[in-house]
Image: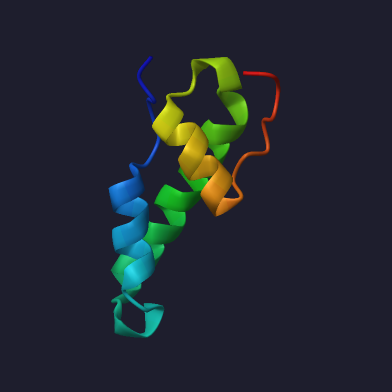
Length: 70
C-alpha cells in the first residue's frame, strides 16, 4: 500500500541533519508544514495500511499516535 502524503525517512533525516540556525526561513517553514502534514497523515492512516518503513519511521520519530493492531 502506498503511503500517500507521507514523508520518506530520507526526507525526515535530511531535514533533521541541518540545524535550524543554518536554514532559511523558507526552509524552516517548509519543514514545519511537511512535518505537520506527515503527522496528520500518520494519525489518520490505519496501522494495517502502513508500509513497514512508515511503521518504523513513526516509531522512531514518536509519531505513532494511531496504534491500532497491525
